[in-house]
Length: 174
Image (tube, rainbow, N blue to C red; front, side, top):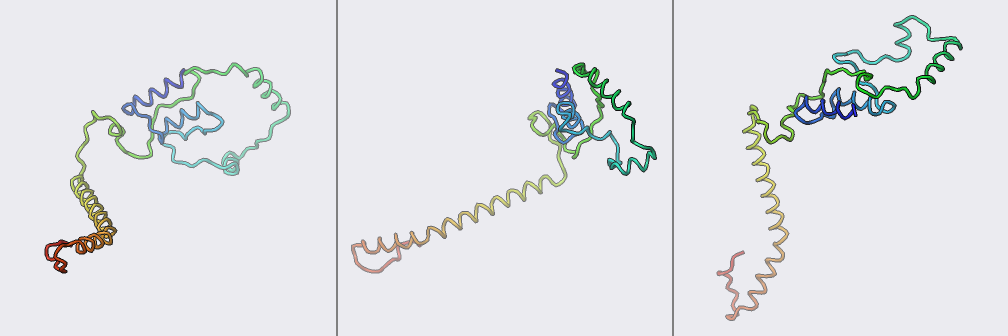
């Protein structure tokens, strides 16, 4: 179908991935689910949508219509029902893309993509390694602390079994 083809063209623009927070995907969602998903704002439009009162104030016109006009539009809609256009030519589609972030989408899952060297990447890697070493040291301290009561019982049991009967624990390591 044309919707599937549109989704493929979005993916082609972004290295095989469809960015879910982009304007083109929002436009695709509107065509797939017109009652649930609003048509995204036009490309490079910085103006926020207007409320009904703001629209009326700008247009300085009335929205009242006669019953004859309402009936005429209703009749036209009933005649056109079932004639809805489903191919690409009927879609109001603009090809301009706006993404929420400037992340390089080619790097998101493509093993072939070259990863550019970012400033501070070495420092980030070193800090990550240092943090992992800290976590490992903390886990080892918790483990040794939780095993300490069991170790002292083991030492007492070995001392009771010693054949000399003396309390010389110089050969034992605590």
